Length: 98
Image (tube, rainbow, N blue to C red; front, side, top):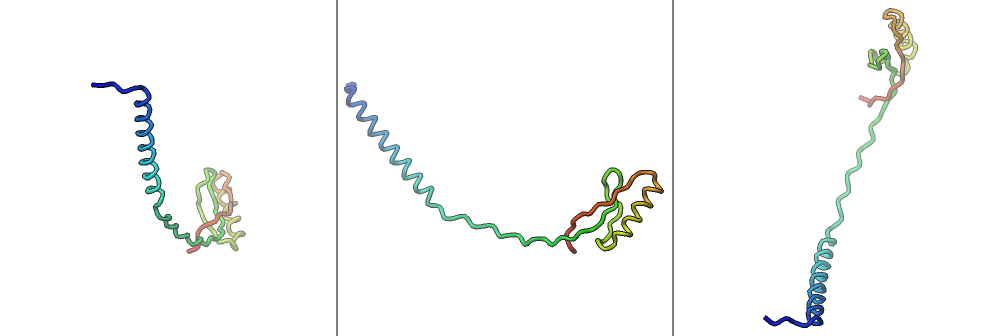
């Protein structure tokens, strides 16, 4: 087996490198030609309403009142605080409309 000169081996390696670079370039261009991605459909915004929640000291909701019934919600909060001996809180919360 004849061993080629260093110059021939370098030339052969350069040709092989050029061929592999050309193959990679064709693969990349073929891969990049994919069509545009479909856009996601926009979700319709959910309408929200404000309600009053009477909550236990741990934060669990006990009763829920409509927004205009704030006086009734405050009365229920005071009544629960007085009867149980623990401080109940009243908070406004947004919930989806039915």
